[in-house]
Image (cartoon, rainbow, N blue to C red; front, side):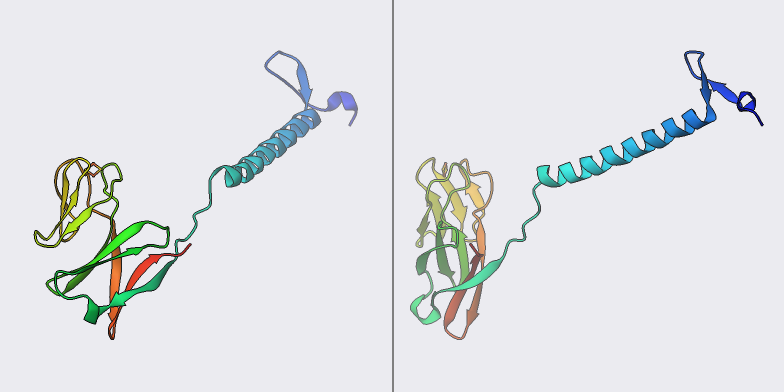
Amino acid sequence: MQAKDIPMEENSSGNEVSRRDFLSNAAMTVGLVISLGTAAIYGLKYLVPAKKKVKYVDVLVGNLSELPDGASLEFVDGLGKKAILINNKGKLSAFSKICTHLGCEVEWQAEKKQFFCPCHKGYFDASGKNIAGPPPRPLDKYKVTVKDDNIYVSVREV
Ligand code: FES
């Protein structure tokens, strides 16, 4: 077969394209697409931060025998934020002292069994739920466990 006999195709501009040129262009196009896809995937890897697993550790904050009903105990969590442990009728709970409105420090009012934020008169009940004023959500809560007489609060590991 002579070179003149090789079938030719026409491209959109009306020029004839040999089968060899067509396959060569197709292979380059596929290679380009694969390269760009790979570059995009690796580029995203650096643009999207990897999910970091948060670890918690139990920290001893006090003794049950020293925290009678109605008493409270302040502590600092793993991120350096002020927090409070309360004994409400034998139920131990720990909360962040940071108000969920604009970050002022809340006060535990043991006689009323509620938290009060003096900045804008926000109120939270003994379970940390926002009950009055501008705070949009409950106080952040910590997991509390008691082993023997020891009270542990689960805080973020730094
Ligand atoms: S900061 Fe607590 S009510 Fe506004």
